[in-house]
Image (tube, rainbow, N blue to C red; front, side, top):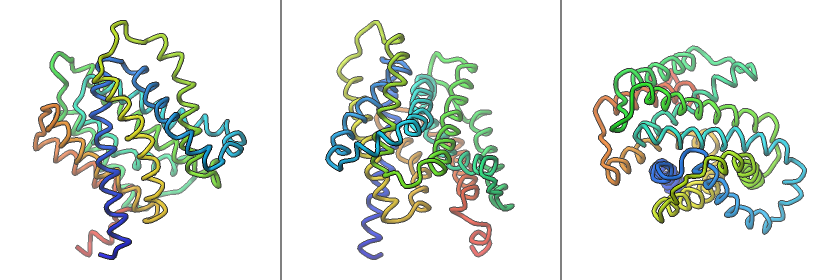
Length: 300
């Protein structure tokens, strides 16, 4: 492995670990803050972290020119998924949410087909079907709610995770269509500022009556600074070094770290069925996005 390849591979694993930890941090925060306040604190912290970098890079004019489209990206890429995941994490384990998050590129491919007319080949269509079968396997038998949660609550939580994944797919296609030429830092910063403004009313009306403790605050500071601010910077660096196709595959590695962190720090069980379902979801998503092709599978 060359030095350049080793560099991006190290950043790839670091990014997967950081985003895998985001589910752990959001779980800790969401139990005390609730869904909307958790999402609001996360994006506000991220915006405050990224804004000085944007000012240093003199990106203010770019932010003002594209504020409407950045607001749309903020809703699709932050408001909807962060609130939905914070809601789901109060019911389902962190590893399950990360596995369902791995369907985001699959939804992106499906939306690109419907919206942009990018018809997938038969292998990608097969990947879409395989991926959704994996999700159905999880929802049907492999997923277990937390103690005290009901089956309807479990199904609502799984649905919230899939809404999040679909929203990420919409955001990616929207940014591709409408945000070409806008710097990644401007997109990241502007979308977080927009998301913070959009979430503020819902967070204010649902703010917990009992003050969250220090652990919950530290968890949300970590998810805002590390898992959103720093992660954005790493992700865009990774795209520059390895290209978007390789950067996309980070989504497949995130569940490994999320499952490990959930088991290590929260005592969450990792069953063979969950691992099997995760493998099915990852295979389907890899085929649906073209990361793995039918031709490469036949060669093996």
